[in-house]
Image (cartoon, rainbow, N blue to C red; front, side, top):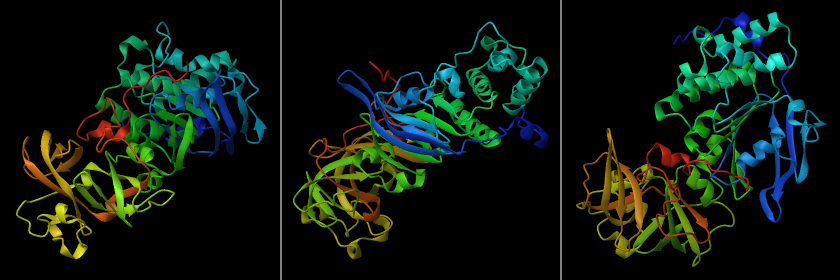
Length: 425
């Protein structure tokens, strides 16, 4: 597969002559009888943005996409494109490009014919249709496969055909519904780069549905996290990664450890044999004596040697001052979290992914470069700035909220909540 970029003249010829200025969703909602699949949603997308809708199966992200596409009528609200109302138009009049999870290619047509199909339906002349299809095929690096049929292509090549077919009509907006979910891990990584490159080359505006956090972080300019049909947080990848607004958003941003404890002092929580000094997060602020949820990433839990005198017996004594912790305990002045026994240890090159169990049966997920084996006792710490303390009660300490994913914090667990399911009854 060639890696050469198309010449500047080609890029200019196939770039949309006009980009949308603004897409607005105002109070957009969708209900099925008494069941509200999408609660009133307000969102403004600027021209040229790549926006990802992120959440578990059933959260409303595909419902929102289908409402945008015109495949579902709105229960309430309106959609405006550059100030003109759009939600009253049928799908074919909106002019959007769509890329589906299953590609939806015509098996009896060649690659070129699949890409050119939308132009043909719009009555574009034969010469222009061929020129535009060939230009897009060069951009997605499929020129040498133009005469093949979909069955002769790999999964990644079929997905590129679907993307080419969506963008050749020069749509004001491209909608992508989990387009990489059917690909293997290596191909997903490759296609992520391809999608971002195509988005930039065409100057597209894209709304992308996914349940994979890593995928969303790598592709999007902004993320919209949904839960139970409601928007939890909107922001840039950096904003959501560093400052999640709730435990639910934190779980999607890779905070695998969600510990249900009690606030014992401002910035400190404890219980069930665990003690954490952390950073208050979200609103309202955690109140002393009230339940809290402490969110910690696996990579931010550090294993401390049993012989380290600075932390010996710290769990039973309570919080430890930053001055009392040795530098080896973790960056930023680490504070003891607690003790546990390694149960599952997975080899990931230079780093081990460890699932450990405390004496109370709670689970901790961490990563370490130290030699650890199943059954080994561990004492773990975390830097205060790496532990977020949210007000409110939650599930059991260490509950795995990323069902169907890598149990010890692999790539998929950072991404989300298992496979895609139907979101509409």
